[in-house]
Length: 100
Image 1: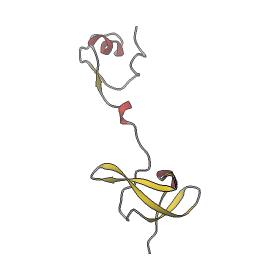
Image 2 (image 1 turned 180 degrees about the horizontal axis):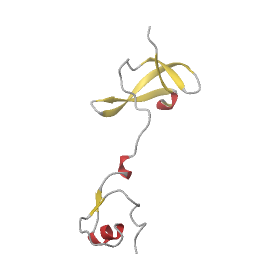
Image 3 (image 1 turned 90 degrees about the horizontal axis):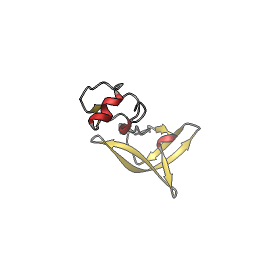
Image 4 (image 1 turned 45 degrees about the horizontal axis):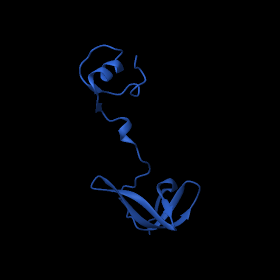
């Protein structure tokens, strides 16, 4: 039999119930798994997921990179005080860092 092995950090255990998140239709979904042998970095999955399932191994917080709109004066100060008038903050320093 093929053995499914995933990074141990992908497994969350609460009240002796182990779960992992897999992608189903592009959405992270928690599923209960039964674990087997493990070492320092990897754990065998006995049941709960199948070969080919995409296991989420870490969560990326996209809110830090999302575009957001702001008022004209705050947006202008993010671009060194020039009046660009776009109202959209795109990357760079966190809001408030460059205010004058």
